[in-house]
Length: 138
Image 1 (spheres, helix red, strand yellow):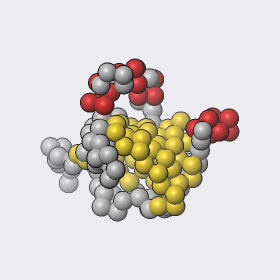
Image 2 (image 1 turned 45 degrees about the vertical axis):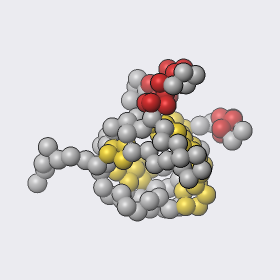
Image 3 (image 1 turned 180 degrees about the vertical axis):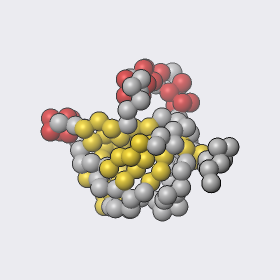
Image 4 (image 1 turned 90 degrees about the vertical axis):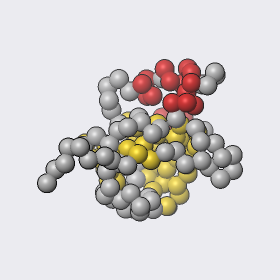
C-alpha cells in the first residue's frame, strides 16, 4: 500500500576524515562496493553530487527514472532528489559532493551558475566522448 505522506530519509554530506569539511567532499572508488546501508531504500541527499563513472555496472534510480551506471559517464544530482540504489557491483569512480552553503561562499558562487549544477533540463546522465574522458582524468 502506498503512503503518499511517507517521509524519506535525507542524508547529509558526511565530513571527510582529513579536513572535517561539512560542505565539500571528494570521493574515489577503485573497485569499491557502494554502501549497503541504503541499498533499496529511497532517500534524498541534502547536497549536490557529481560523479565521473570510469567503470560502472550498478543500477540507480533518480526521481523514478532508472539508470544503469555506464562507463565514462558523468552522473549528477541536486539536493532533495529521490535516489534508490538497486545494484551492488564494484565501482570505479571519482565524485565531488557540495552543499548550497559551499556555493554561497564568496569565490564559489560562480560554480552555482554552471549548467551542470543548475541542471535546467533535469538530466542526470552525461555520456562522455573519448576526448572528454581524457580531460576529466587531468
